[in-house]
Length: 84
Image (cartoon, rainbow, N blue to C red; front, side, top):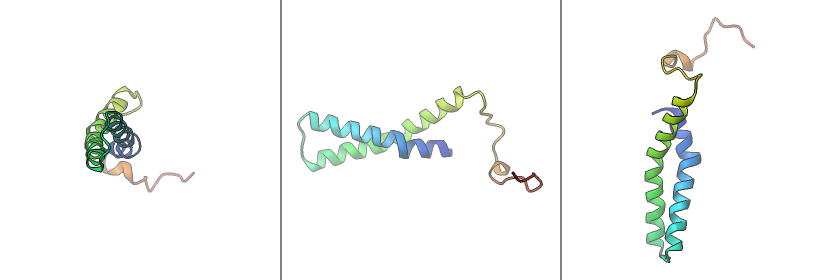
């Protein structure tokens, strides 16, 4: 997994899926807390694969993304590089 998956899961897909499923449950007339909790948990569980798929799509369509460029050295800046 990559960082983009984590960010998309926590900020975009989880709230959208959880809220959408809770709205559907309420619109269908189920008002018990167990059903609302189940819908929210289902949205949370479904948000992880949705975030992963969106992350893959974003990276596939980005012409500047190079999967070979990353690695352990990409996290730490070069010590010999000039400071800005």
